[in-house]
Image 1: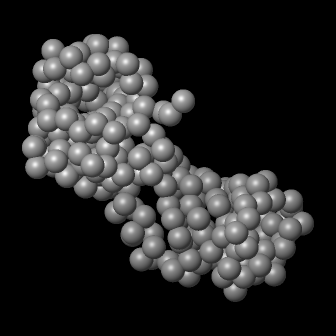
Image 2: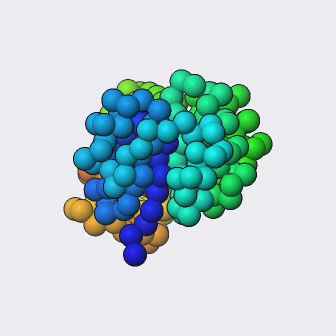
Length: 219
């Protein structure tokens, strides 16, 4: 069976989620209170509906509690985002992911029961900043307030060295959990594996340790 999602809010973030879910062969009900936005996704989403999701009766009439995952991607209207999330919890939606505008918004969302809170603008800013600081940082994803996972392309300082020789865990407190090489992902690489130039190292650790590793090894 196809997975079923509801995306509420069809701005850039919500719209991109709709497109990707449809691309991955999921069923998507797309909802917004703006008729023009809904019209734009009428031919893309499985269903596209104009609705006020801060109204519990409207949510119930749409049968949203029957969907396994609802994404609240409402843009600038923090009040509507919070009210919608609260209503979704009250009608019994199993999983709710919500876009947060700021840390205060995120705290409220967590308190009222959002299963996952995302900060797309902040996270993208972090990724771009790391890419600017080092050409070898390909991607950067926060796992928590203090820990992240990063993709780092091996440079001349790393090429030709073995993992045990680098002793990255002891020196920097980070772990190499996988290596991407020639289109393949080598999970849990052996300690005697020699790093090749252009290998992509997938590392995990505290933000402070990753930053220290970046400054010492990649610059």
